Length: 54
Image (cartoon, rainbow, N blue to C red; front, side):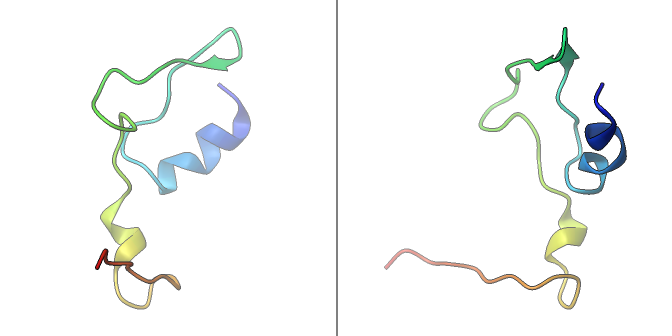
């Protein structure tokens, strides 16, 4: 698994992508096949905004 996935992605998502022969495999779950960590969206943790369809 590439170093950037081992050292950085686990801070962002709950499940890391499966890498085979240097290529990320398609996720088996729905959507992106992973979930962004809730800590990314805590108030004061990062700069972000929520868009709402009108």
